[in-house]
Length: 140
Image 1 (tube, rainbow, N blue to C red):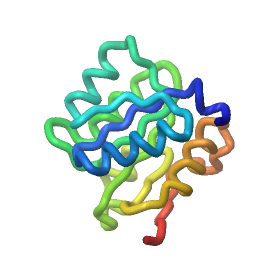
Image 2 (image 1 turned 120 degrees about the horizontal axis):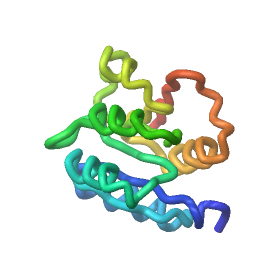
Image 3 (image 1 turned 180 degrees about the vertical axis):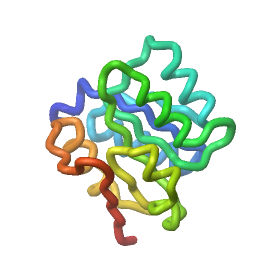
């Protein structure tokens, strides 16, 4: 275990398999995880204000609200919350909506747990070097 024990991550992912996998990996790494099954649940979690995640891991394409909608909501917060946007569609990396939403990091699915956890640790420690938008394309 490391300093992850006190960090809370909101995972917004509509794919049940991938959602369970992410939750398992993050929980085993010592993070507290709150799960949203779609964009609406993610927005509800963020809107209630009772839950203040240290980081949000959000899928781009989800029912009800997209990952871009969730990012727009997060940008209204008075405090900075790092956001990792995930997508299985590589072309989205250069789409105007994605670049305009300005996530802290973009992960192209599939990605390894090693890359995911290293990215999260870096972002939570404030050592993530991206100034605007960084792409991490992981090999199978």
